[in-house]
Figure 1: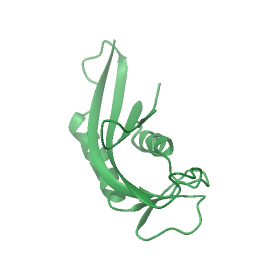
Figure 2: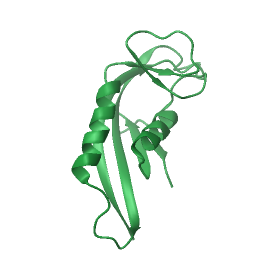
Figure 3: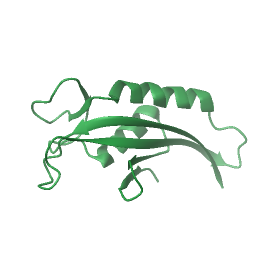
Figure 4: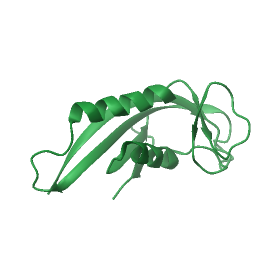
Length: 124
């Protein structure tokens, strides 16, 4: 069994995914985000939980209330936070991958608000 430390946070952001005819207009999401750092089997300590939480909250504070702009997207409303995603705009999948790589996390889950909405998972 692997031991993981999980940090949690949330953001409210906007995006405009051009890949979707249905959702291709500017709109917003409230995302609940979980990021984990996992250790090898049977360890007693993985990472400083408070530090992981601070790092996640710091990253999310930079994004909160902004438009998520893909680095390959054209014009974007201000204020925006740029993420290296494809030209179709920032997706939940791309956001999860970005957060995982930024934090050095083992896995990240990005869930849209509400129980009937999707979650996006990046990790093993």
